[in-house]
Length: 118
Length: 113
Image 1 (tube, rainbow over the protein chains, first blue to last red):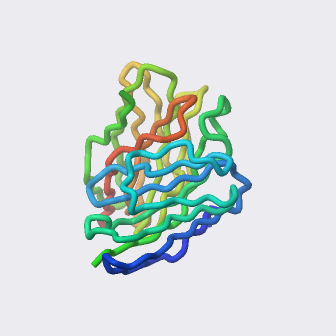
Image 2 (spheres, each protein chain N blue to C red):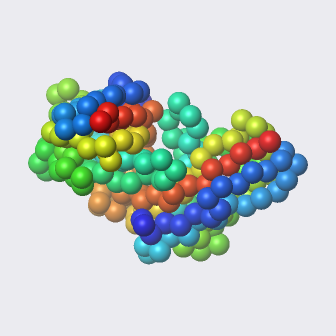
């Protein structure tokens, strides 16, 4: 148990569906992240939120829409996805990203949501 | 550009044998480095970290890594592996002032009985 909880663990959806992934951190951290993990590829950073404000968006298609209502919760809203979007989506949190205290930059990950788009 | 390279995609090793998983980084600014482990159907778990200070870093489960600035390497080692060490291992690097980490492509360690 890392203190970062993701739900659901598995999700199968059609290309016309709308679904949401949820992430909750119980560590009192200020930053949260969404990553995409595809086979044979490095982890791809999708979004970064710091103090509920989006600070990074790495050219992610608009069919992925993040939401961070508070520093403990992060959502990823999905709509009209493509089969190539099938992957493991990982959420992470850190105490103080980009700060001088490197120990506060450590990221802690959830178990991920395995997404299959049919 | 900041990047992390893991030279081996798969490493098979017999139980109780030593193992080294290689990681090289490239950066022109101060860096900090991590090794994460991912067991099947799970997220990434922090194995060890180098932030500053001693270049030999000890982590959980008997793993250690050495930060070598002249060779820009951060190889992971364990003197005697167990079946339970079978997993995917990721090297990652960060840079002060940056929001994100740079991950390698991962090395799948398979421990053979």
